[in-house]
Image 1: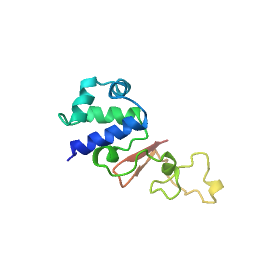
Image 2 (image 1 turned 90 degrees about the vertical axis):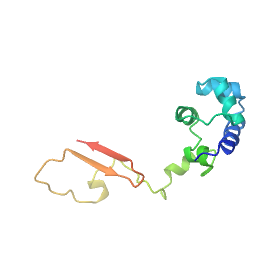
Image 3 (image 1 turned 90 degrees about the horizontal axis):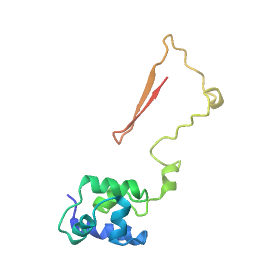
Length: 127
């Protein structure tokens, strides 16, 4: 459950970071000024649409940080490319031969490969 008071504090941090007033912030994420005012005052909880607009407009904002205070703000973009990251890096330009790996011999042609990640997402590679 989102604590509306803490959410409002984090929203204020985002506005301060970008040096935006509530009116300017509402224009940036394309919502009515009253929406910002009602959220900041604790009158209304943020809608999913509101949260998604914030994340789309300000990529440095992490979803879990905004909703629950878990994580960092601003998000460290470079940490996403760190080799210690749990997500694998795909090297599309490197062939199997360059990696010193033998090509497996298949009697059938591969149509697609699907990789499932632990976070529930997947990547689909189609031939």
